[in-house]
Length: 166
Image (cartoon, rainbow, N blue to C red; front, side, top):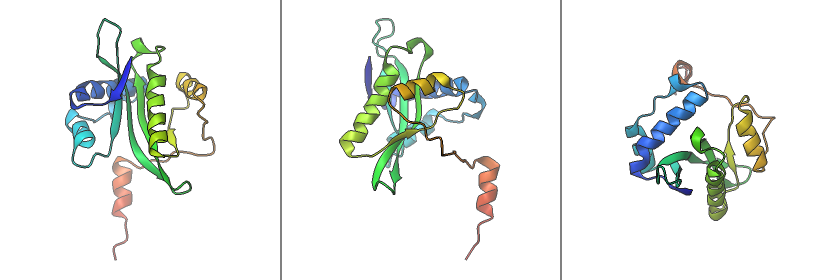
């Protein structure tokens, strides 16, 4: 197994894995990501998204991208340091149980340690028991006192339009 930073030639495979993840999470209909968008945010003038890929070294499809970790920086005002927010961690079903997911997560933990970041955080769906068990086994602690809120689509536009103008 190999985990390495994402490269431009990985983008089609990464988009495919994002779609697989969305399908697994019963939300494929919500995916709008294009290869062009992903290329721009990963490799543009001011990258705002970062990523790592896991490749298969199984002899059948050597070098094939079979896992992803897409992340961005956040900031803790309480800690006074950056952290990593893990947007997506996914390993194709045929490669689960091989340690690729753990290695992707460990790679991000190492980035945090090397750069002096204080947190590695992510969200997981409440029904996704295999992932929750995986994260707990890694030593992660659920933040049960916190609820994620989100504004999107029409609600986002409507709320923004109601802004007071000076």
